[in-house]
Image 1 (cartoon, rainbow, N blue to C red):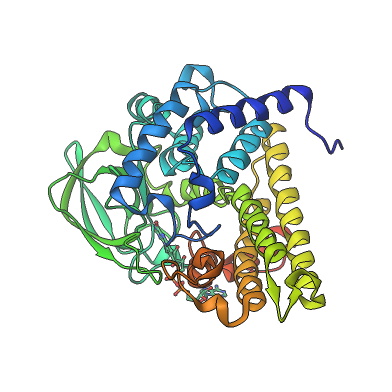
Image 2: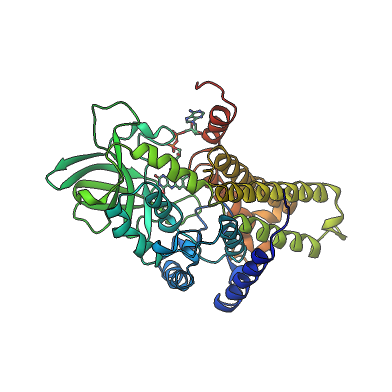
Amino acid sequence: MEFKFSEQEEAFKKEIEDFLKKELPAGRAEMSMHWPGGYGSMEAASKEVLEAAFKFRRKLAEKGWLTISWPKEYGGVEHSYMEQAIYDERISYYRAPGMGIATGIAGPTILRFGTEENKKDWIAPIARGEIEMWLGYSEPNAGSDLAGIQTTAVEDGDDYIINGQKTWSTIAHLANYAWMIAITDPNAPRHRNASLFIVDNKSPGVTIRPLINIVGVHSFNEVFFDNVRVPRRNMVGEKNMGFYYMMTALDFERLMVGVGGFRRLFEQFVEYVKQSQRDGSPLGKNPMVRKKLAEIAVKIELVYLFFWRTASMLDKGLVPSVESSVLKLTATELSRALADVTMEIMGPYGQLMGGTEEAPFRGMAPRGYLDCISATIGAGTSEIQRNIIAMRGLGLVKK
Ligand SMILES: Cc1cc2nc3c(=O)[nH]c(=O)nc-3n(C[C@H](O)[C@H](O)[C@H](O)COP(=O)(O)OP(=O)(O)OC[C@H]3O[C@@H](n4cnc5c(N)ncnc54)[C@H](O)[C@@H]3O)c2cc1C
């Protein structure tokens, strides 16, 4: 066990930092209103920001940094997963647009399970940062229990015809393609009856309607599929293997916790505490404040340890599964703890929203307090992560 980076890893970390300092607009990291773990304060939640993010991502793509650990023949640079983790940490610390759904979730799943045709069609545009996808899993009657989906894909010659509704579809209005699951064999047993598809948002019959989240931002949508024709070659991997592939895709998703964002926000809050007074005394002298901050500092270190562990597992050829859930659970519960602690320490001032002149800490606390709720629901709720840890990790029987 080695608790430090190699010389090569340190050099790579520096290369990323130099690049980010040069290429990111000045002050971006300080001014960002992103709450780590939250969806409502995601940078991608507006068209202008997303376009800027796409531009920035293309620069990352030119360096091969969107696909750091991918094989060279698929546009990657064959760095280790640890180097990819170092990159993710620095990108999220600087609040830069990094990997998206296409590069972080769809690409790795296609590389693992896709047909040669899938790889030919999708890997190059994903690696070049040209396309983005949204995740079409949840439906009005299927969230935690995704086997309850009702969307169908019926074979018709060389195509499939899709009918149904997806919901909570984050960035569907900004992305180009749905990465979605639909029932392809209604007579087969649960979990062996569905397939994954990639569907062009521009296909006739796709209707995307906004849902406004708790922070007041249009980050997700409900999406309707009305006789949408999709070529058979857009099916990912084999027919009826969709749930199996989706479980791996979810494990990839649960690794994308934006670990650096927690450290950055915490550093900013500690700075606020250092510069604040309450009743004529430095805020940082208050024993309750010191205790709460120390507890958060420990939780951040824990999330970092789980994060590095998943990278080291991937480098050993293992696929993190329970470990992805542990990381997701710990990081998103930290998102909530951080919001609770900032609100508690700031007292009544903590309720002043951003945009108010008197709002301390730029009004981040109330925004985070609302946004952190999404963290422990999206990509599988905390209860579901605990169930996975109990079943797959501890071997306890299914309820
Ligand atoms: C901000 C945000 C973004 C999202 N983005 C997307 C997206 O892009 N694409 C997508 O497909 N989905 C997305 N989702 C949907 C998300 O995956 C689901 O909301 C989530 O899986 C929970 O499903 P549900 O809302 O149907 O709640 P339910 O499954 O109905 O759960 C309700 C409550 O019951 C608990 N519960 C359910 N089953 C169990 C069980 N077996 N044991 C213990 N407790 C249980 C849950 O933890 C929860 O507290 C997003 C959600 C949010 C909040």
